[in-house]
Length: 261
Image 1 (spheres, rainbow, N blue to C red):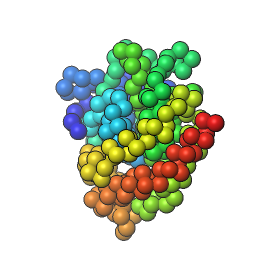
Image 2 (tube, helix red, strand yellow):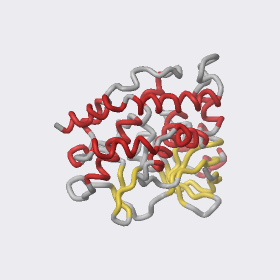
Image 3 (cartoon, rainbow, N blue to C red):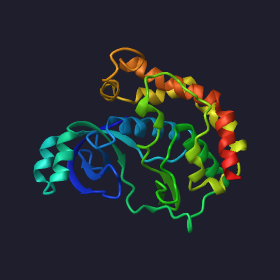
């Protein structure tokens, strides 16, 4: 992953629950910044990196994800006290996504996707436990007439109360019934094997290698021992979780297929 330094806070994106912001980087790029000091904490940044990396491995389009260094001095130029507090609480390393200029929100009543895309996206969201792809909040953008995936901070629901052990890896993901593209996902059984074959142990280890030690240390701070106590074993715990989830996929895949019915 590339790293940038935030050079200017441009504007908040208040439609997001964690109040992300449009910022400029020292590379002259424009990004959507996800704050480590927001209410969802560092685990939302972990989810952004891990789910985004898995999506990319499955050839699902995700904006480039970068690590973003934030100077708390930027808070001095912001008149809004809430934004000032958020910037100060997020000093240091954060996560940002490339800003897709001119993109518009996906409208399920107007925008169309192929059954293949819909099926691959539903499969992915069931794998990573993404609760945030509903008709009310699609977290899809249309950019150059193609759908792009954004905002995976609410994925990986399992890791908010997690000690590193794999529990019920085959459990169907009930929120998939509300997925915005479930009606179009007519090829779930057909895409399953090809997608699973991409997510080898080596692939998952490469995805987790992008996660900074600092984030893993913060997320595992309450665990004095066990697999989450050290960054290396913390990474492996995520890899083990997804390998177990893939091994148990006949059950959760059937859950998604049944939800279509």
